[in-house]
Image (cartoon, rainbow, N blue to C red):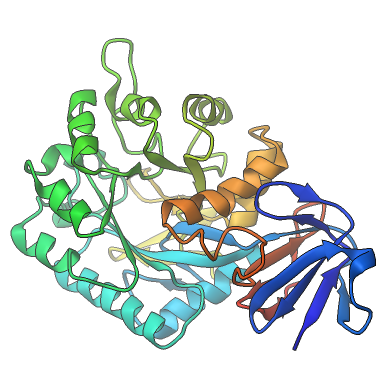
Length: 381
C-alpha cells in the first residue's frame, strides 16, 4: 500500500534535505517532495525526528544473529545474519566465508545462490576471504587452510552467476594472469592478508585488482623506503578500500590519513562482524576455538583480532564522533560508496524515484528505530 514517511530529516544518499516526505509504493521509492505538496489522501507515518537514510550496505559480514557463515552454510544461517544485522541499519550484505576448504566455500556460494533464487532480500552476493593468503599475514585465519590458488579454484570462482562474488587474496602469491582471469570473469578481486611489496600490488592492479580488504589490517604497512600494501592502496586513485571503524582495528588518525589520501568515494565502512552481533550469545566457535567478546573486542588465543562486534550504525557513529567525519560522509561510506563498488547503485544507495525502498531511520544519538527492505517495514525500538 502506498504511504509516506514524514517527520525526519531526509538524507538522499548525497545530501540532507529538510521538510520533505518520502512516498513508498510496491517496495519502491515513488517520490520525495516537500511535505506541503504531499497528497492529503496518502497515509502518513510520522517518524518524529531523527534521520531517514538509505539502508546500510556491509560488504564483509562473517556472521550475525548467532550464526557464523563458514560454520553453517545454510539458508537459515543467512536469514539469521540478516535478522541480526538489520537492527543496526544493515539492509544489504555480502555474507563472508573465511579461509577453509574449497568444499566449504563452494557450499557457501551455493547457499547464497539458493537464497537469492528464493527471493531472500538483502543478500547481494558473497565475499570469499581466503584461503590464498600470505602465511605471515593470516591474522585469525587458520594456517592449515592457507594455500596457493589452483586452476580449479579459478574455474569454479569464475562461473557465471547472477550476483557478485568478491575474493580477497594475497596478490604476491597469485601467478601472472590469475587475477586478470578472475577479474575478466566478473569476480571482484581485493588484496588482503598480504605481505606484498608496492610493485607487486601495482602489478596486481594492472591485472584488475579492484580493492583492499580491511585497510591497514593484515597487510604490509608503509615505510619511507617501502610503500607496501597500504601505500599502494592509498596511492591508487581507482581502487576501493574497506575499513573497520570500531576503535580496535584502526587508529582514528590513520583513518583520517586514508580519507585524505584516497579520492572521495573510494573508502567504505565495513563491520567484519561475527555471530555475536544481534545475538544474546557473546561467544562463538572459529576453527574449534571459542572466541569471547570482551568490551566490544574479539581476540583469539593467539592474541589476534578475530573480526569485530559492531553493526553498521556503530561504524557510522564512530566514524562521525570518534574519527571526526561529517555525518553525511559517514552515511555515504555506509551505503552509496559500497553500492557503487558493487555496481548496484542503479537501485541501492540513494533515496530516489525507482530505487528499492531500503531505508534506515535512526535517532540523533544513533539508535536505529526502524528499517525497510524493499518496502518491508520493521520496528526496532
